[in-house]
Amino acid sequence: VKDNPHGAHLVILPGVDVDGKVYRMTHQLPSLLDEPDTCTFSVIILAQNSHDRVRRCIQSVLRFADASNIELLLVDNASQDGIDLWAEALKYQEPRLHILRSTRVMGIADAYNMALKQSRGRYILILDSSAEVTGDIFTPLEKTLADKEIGITGLHGLSTDDLRHFEECAPEEAEVVDSQCMAFRRGVLKKAGLFDERYRYPHYMDIDFNFAVRDTGARAVVTPDLP
Image (tube, rainbow, N blue to C red):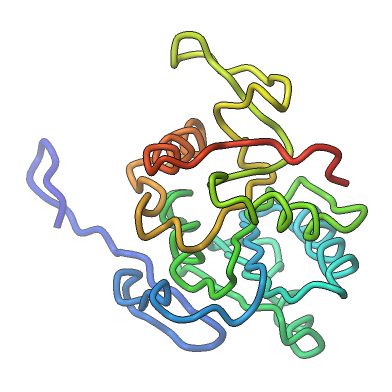
């Protein structure tokens, strides 16, 4: 029940379907963060009425992941463009694919957090659906994150002078890694926490998460020349 100036109204909270298992409310979705790793990378891709981009992104990941031990988590944020039917058909051929489908549109942070809690990889890679992989990105990312002082890495680095405006910077000067391609150890979530769910839209959400990771004492760096 949510109050409004004229009284109150009911808000139907979103549920989620995870590989065919339905949870009536998202907070009932169990967290697997304390479970042991089952693969090297958990790749998370968010779909929200972006059918063509999502297909291209997923197919490119699977094309160049043959030598890597991965799982791919597709978060379907109540899309209405048929991506669910395509993903279900692909799942019959691709056991590495897991589908998390919300019954109603959720905030971006909430949607990503569902996948973070269900991830079982040693490392987590968040890819924007607009990205297309053209080569092996897993080996260089794993090599970067093997340094225990590095907490988060990816394709583009950002820096700021006033904490209000963030600009792309040289790799060695990065203060923040952009979420278009952002990787980190799953274990860091126990210290840094998940994405702040007050972010309904993605603007600054990734910057906030970078700062949380850096507050643990870890560094943010760019992995150069990712394909």
